[in-house]
Image (cartoon, rainbow, N blue to C red; front, side, top):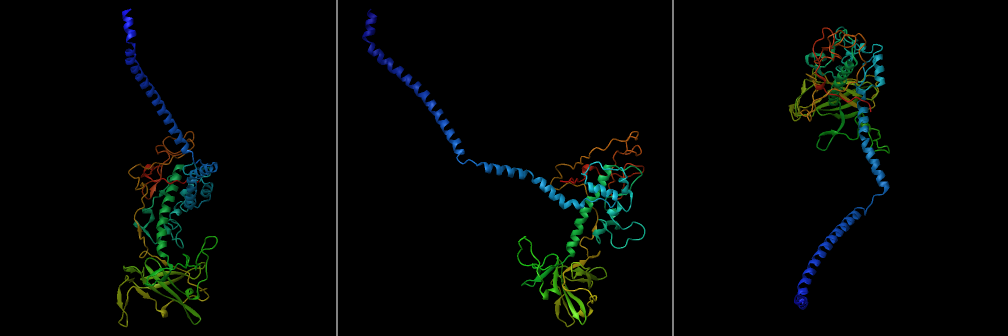
Length: 463
């Protein structure tokens, strides 16, 4: 009883000490829980605001549709580029002039596809006037053909080949053994023709560009520059363009028709048609624009083709002389005066007369006739294929094309060679490597063609 009385007596002080303690603990618990909940809610609110901000400028459906169309257009761009490149290159991939082989060309097979040989199409390559005519139409033996040749080697003339013959430079099959030619061999033969023809065409275009002259004028400094009022064909054009975006032709002034200045990188030539009674003479002045001495040509003669219309045959005009010094050189004339040595003028009295009846209304175009002395690219020493591009040559090797499988060999055909061929030859033999090789896979065949992995592969598939 006494203990309870003491507890009752001092309960105030006991509660005064305990209640604040528990109150403080409760406050701490409440602050911690409420603060965490508030932070969580604040984070959720901030995240929601960010999502809403991202959608404050929504894209309309039409814009999304336009984007889809653009993506589809970009995806088809590779096909358009493929088609454009094919259109520019398709003329290179012609087959030899044979009715049977032209049928294959018209069908347009993709590179590596099995080719038909039901009528002996592959044997057409054995004919000299079919396969070798792709390289040169000038016979190897016998009387020469009339006029210039039409083969790929003929068309770069007068550029010469090392050894005096294209056979020592261009890769070709010089002998077809008496074994069946396979479809793969035909494709490789045609690939050599196409690639080498393209490379020789580039050489020919350089020679042609250097031979052509463009209409010119003299500027205020006396330098010979292009005349922008004439196009590459020597036709006068009007200023500006028509509704179709093309530059329309314009009539040439009378004073520019029969007296004209032309130039290229090396020469400037001024030509004039001079009337002489009932006849007309073509006279001119030749100027060496370079700073180097320039040879005139074989026989100490420089020959130009001059067109008076774009439809008729040109007239030949010649300047005589061994060479012409470079720009800045001087010489003494017959009167003892110092005159430019890089200028050669044709004596009007010695100028050639134009044929009677020849239509001469305007000097349209001029072109130089090259010979072995003046042609820019004088000789082709080697034509090397099978090299990778300099950018990726050290990264990955060339790989052969995936030729489609041909029909299985005929029953009873000897193993190890082409169907119908003698045993021991490599299946699907390849044309030989260096120029003038034989076709592999037959008796007496010698040499070998470089592995396909070391040769460039062109994409000849149609779009």
